[in-house]
Structure formats: C-alpha cells, structure tokens
Figure 1 (cartoon, helix red, strand yellow):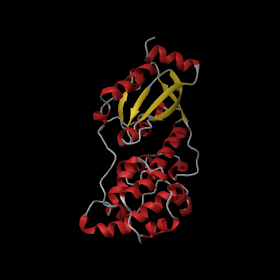
Figure 2: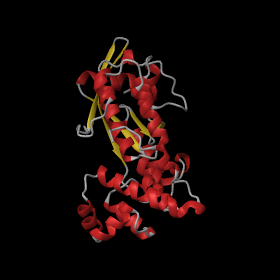
Figure 3: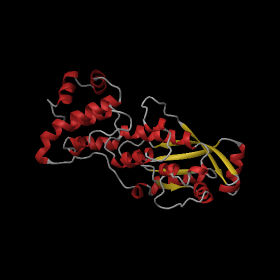
Figure 4: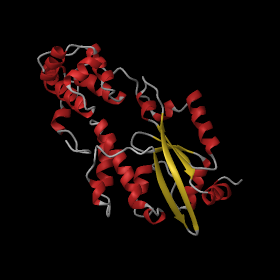
Length: 287
C-alpha cells in the first residue's frame, strides 16, 4: 500500500457495530487491521509478540482469525503498536467492543483550565503568529498576530478557516514565495497522517483535495514513507512591499486517554531574520 492510499473501503464498512454479523466481522476485520498496523510500524510478528508480551503462536492465531481477541488483548496490542487513540477506538469497535477513549468536542475541550492555558500560550507568542488546529487542520483558535496577518493578506478569518487548505488556495499562492517547497512539506505530513489514521475519511478527503490542486509538483503527489519528517517548515511571505520569512513548528499534547486533545496541534511561527522580527513587532503586535 502506497503512502496516502486508502485501505479497501469494503473492509472498513464491516467495522460498523452489528451484533448479527459480529463473528464474521471479527474474523475478517480485526486480523486485517492488526496486520496493517504491524506493517505500518515495521514490526515482524515476533517483534510484536515480544513487545506485547504474548506468545508468537497466539499472535499468529489472532492474525489469521483462528482466535478472537479479548478487549484486554486489543488494548495491549494497540499499546505495543502505538496506535493513535482514535484508531484504538476504531479497533475496539471493529471487534464488537465499545470505545474506551473519550472524544469530546473542541468547544467542550477548550474550556476551564486547559482553555485558559491555550489562551495564555497564544497571548505570550504575540507578536508572532500562532494557531491551534484540529486533526484536519481546521483552525479552532489563533492569537492576535495571526488574526492581524490574515487581515493584511486579505484572508477572511472566518469560522471555516483551514490551515492546510489555505496554503493550497489559488488566491493565497501569490503571497507564498516558497509555495512549491511548502506544499511538498504539507503533503508529506498529511500523507503520513492518513497512513496512521486509515479510517479517518475527513483526513483522506483533505489529502485528496490537496493532491488534486492545480500545479502541485508531481514529486509530492506520490507519497514517500521514507521521506524525513522535518521538525520545522520554512514559510516565506510577500504581502505588498512587506517580505517575511518564518520557521514554523507543530506542537502536540501528550495526553493519553482523550482523543480530541491527543489530536490537537499548535502551530507556532518564529521569525528567521531581524527584518521579519521587526515587521512582526510593528505590524502584528503594535510594539
């Protein structure tokens, strides 16, 4: 399976809870998903057996459908494979069990202490842009510098703003001096995320839309699983007579037990030169 390629849709249609076909579903879906995730992690059957502290014989029976997993075994194998929390819920559902990890909405998540903490992070990053996005890159919060920059660029800072789609927007492209390089970095990131979240239809739709954008470099249309995942991405902007150069990083929360928080990302922009730093202070922060 190539990077960005979707697993056969018929397989995952079987993952919908249905007590009548439970045995048939487990027989087909769980072994396929287990082998899929093991392949994604580059682990042999023996490697996984050792990591999960189960016998290689029992693991073989699970992968061939000769044995059915208990909920404890599903969670044990998911932990050993470091499967994302949303996919652990999907794996549990595929075997007929209920989800174990809460999936609160963004609004419910970003309240109270956590919401205050995120707001503090956003405020302290001014006058440099910072945005908070969900798993599909929909912007859920942004700081004052980010709002101001969007306004200067003539971009509508509306409720449906999506960071990934924005970069590929033909109207925004003239503002990005390193557009071809940046779109390659974004596509490689989303391609890897689709591989790690094989049941996420929204993420797969996002990737398909981005890849289908006119004039995307052919090198980025076909994913490369071996390509390095850069910790920071360069972004060069030209807005009118102002030229800015940023280094952007993506931060995630390490919060096992909560799907939504586990998928939340914070993108921070840092000036790469003194000119950009000065422009940010004058234009984005008012100081």
